[in-house]
Image (cartoon, rainbow, N blue to C red; front, side, top):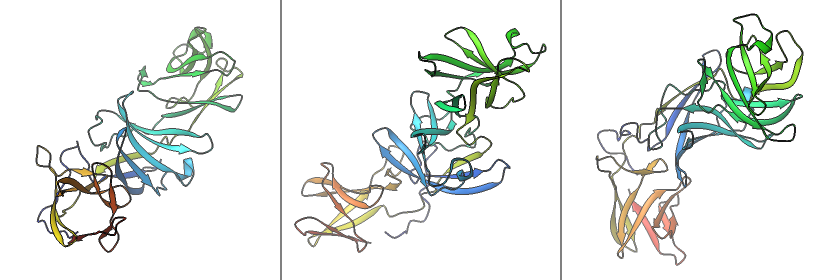
Length: 315
């Protein structure tokens, strides 16, 4: 399709990013290490964005990962995750609050610090959990469950003044691992005030406990996301079916914005009384009815049906 409109069809407000988003990723030294586009998709769970071929986080999480950005309706936030092959788990690397499921996750406020936590018992992985948005004493607080000893136990990790049982000097702050089931602290982490990662000890200056926590995420990195300008695109196509021309047109919302699907605007035309859609399915351009009958668009612009009827787009 040719590009002939005089002004760009830009994304309307933050509520839509029809052509995807661009991620700018900075390393722990604040250096921009990658700018990459995330394509938009529509699935049963709503709109999501996906990045393949990213390398920015490879030093931390390894190569060959795919980033997925989606809305978590339980925690009311956008999340960015990847699949950890070794643990066979989806690991949340970043979160964004303040934007709803129908809005674009574009912001300079993506939080990548202290999000993904591994709970280890005697240096062996036990369970994984994420920060769920809670704060205690101005720092992130965590709640998780583990059955390392048999029964399921509920734990809380929080930052604050060390309890008397820690045996620390008055006014000393630490991370406390608290067993909600027994109502007693089970370990402390001193000298680390950013994230609760490290080996927990029995008391101030005491012996190591069997518990430690490590980072499964990308703490220290930073990420900014902006909408991709859709650019200008034709608002109508001429579709020829067996020598007869039909006009396929884009659709608009109530504000005059062109509607899209999978990052591209789509077109609608009538053929023998039925509506047909020309749209991008995430891999190919296709023509389909709302009944799911589809025709793939080949590189030469021809759509083929099993009975060899040809449908051709006139650019």
